[in-house]
Image (cartoon, rainbow, N blue to C red; front, side):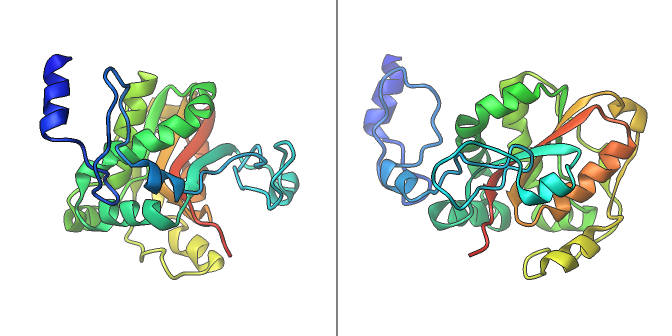
Amino acid sequence: MLLRSLIDLMFPPLCHACKGVIPVADGASPQPLICADCLGQISFLQSPLCTRCGAPFATEHGSDHLCGACLCHQPFHTCRSAAVLEGPLQDLIHRFKYGGKMHLADPLALLAWQRLEGFLREAGPDCVVPVPLHRKRLRQRGYNQSQLLAELFGRKLKVPQVVGNLRRLRWTEPQTGLDAGDRVTNVKGAFGVGDPEALAGKRVLLVDDVFTTGSTLGACVDVLREAEVAAVAAVTVARGIPH
């Protein structure tokens, strides 16, 4: 503890977003190392939300309930995101995903864990499954950002991460810039499960970095359902909110 305090005194931790110094209290639990000013610029999602898909409602007050879309067609899975994709969080995710900043995986996952621990524990998953990348994109990027995020959730929940069973079968164009309909078409038939028996009957935590329209998560859920998993809870660090 004394050594840790001396290191923090000589080399104080810096905010991953603005690079400002962050004071760390002795004995403090692990933190995402994002300063109070930057945290204040992050819009964390909170009630009222859709109890199924996690979509926030426009009102500031009220209880959680099903949204119109889920009332008409209740999906097989539940989903939650920690915060809105904007401001410092959007910059961090962009650097993590496209800038090769792999060290941002734990801070981003920890940020989501601190906001969504209750949901994640209640989901009671048997395993954690990251949304896979196509091998071509994996070679280009060098890592799967969803897999890196999923590692922390697996450690916290003490369940294994299953990599390679949920597979991306074909190349898809980046979803950025596509409208909702084109996003669904783009990922249709793009995923598959290599060994359905290994997942059958299990409760799966599906992990991705960003929820925009839900088309990618939905395509993954469809093939997991065909593999006869018991349930799917999906989690992302951020969610894009149409303005």
